[in-house]
Amino acid sequence: MVQEEIRRNNVGTLLRHVHLGGSVSRTALSERMRLNRSTIMALIAELTRAGLVREELPQGTGRAGRPSLVVRPESGRAYVLAFDVAVDRLVAARVALGGIVLDRREAVRPRAGADLDRVVEVLAEFGRRLHGEAPPDALCVGVGASYCGMIRPGDGMVRFGPDLGWVDQAFGAELGRRLGLGLPVSVGNEAHLGALAEQQRGAGANLQNLIYLHGDVGVGGGIIVGGKLLDGDSGYGCELGHMVVNPYDGRPCGCGSHGCLEAEVGERALLDAAGRPAELFGRDAVRAVADDADRGDPAAQEALHRIGDWLGIGVANLCNLFNPGMVIFGGTLREIYPGMAAQVRARIAANALPVARERVRLRTSALGYDATLAGAAELGFSGLLADPLGVLARTAPCSARR
Ligand SMILES: [Zn+2]
Image 1 (tube, rainbow, N blue to C red):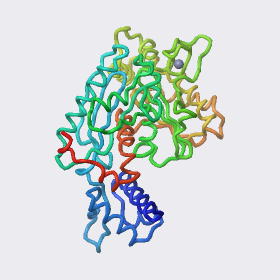
Image 2: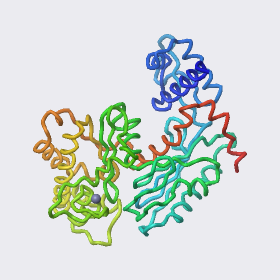
Image 3: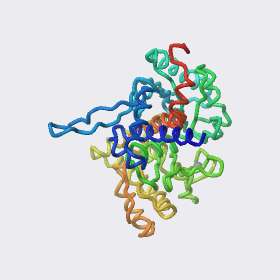
Image 4: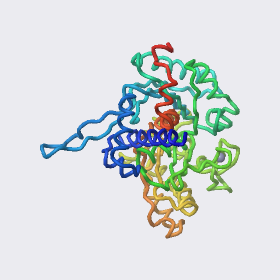
């Protein structure tokens, strides 16, 4: 029994290395897993027979000698469905091992209050279509979803989603029911998932201590310390957007407080600072401010500088608290950060302790708007990576479930 558990664990660990690395040599696997070459070869053989990896010659090897084979994830066999609920947008994708998006659907979400039924209807329709168009022998091994709010771990209940006006909505259970695939839907907070995705295959690849700030209407946060997400006592931690930076005359926040970071740097604050009319909103409106600033428009530049000052205060506090190796700006912050980087840096220099900030790197997200979707896909893959052969044995091919 113990032997069997060790083997299962090793098969899963090897698949995880290949899934995240994309292309890994036998030697590297042997070193990382501290297993001898013949054990590694036996594990690769099992995963190859299962259709999850393949071995091939590395790209770009010229003529010399016998190059050693690399192991790559196989994208035709197992996939997950990944969903992303952002304020403006609903996205669904079929994602293969290696994080490869095979197919996707996207819809604009009207800003229309608590609309669980509508959101689930659109996503479930997308999901069923993606599933229906998968090759007949492909296996859907999991479903993950990212949501812009506070999620109860375990059942995907949205406890609080101020930007969509959702309180205690059974999102994960409803989406699972409407998909009708007999698979549970794992749901996570968008910024938590974005942080993990950036750490797994983005700007913070392999860093153990990083902070991810995700701009949408508000600002979400994910903090990774010692390689692990800080999600708090009950899963609701890292609400960096509700860190108070301006308590005395701050702007009202969707959470009911005043002067929260997201109230001062979120979408409305930026558009107001840039003098944009109240009926303009959304990521395109935010991008337009960044573009105008790029072209030298003084009002847009001034707006970015003001917002950047508040953002810098927030990041300076985070440096003092967590001493991160990197702070990553994602979502709409990725669009506007370059125009306010000087203000953010100036605030950090003025307000963070020298030893807490001396090594911090400030970066924009490498995965862009897909960071949250990539994180949702990883949630979907977690079962397969824990027990690849067991999950395959328990999963019926797509053709049998249509
Ligand atoms: Zn708030």
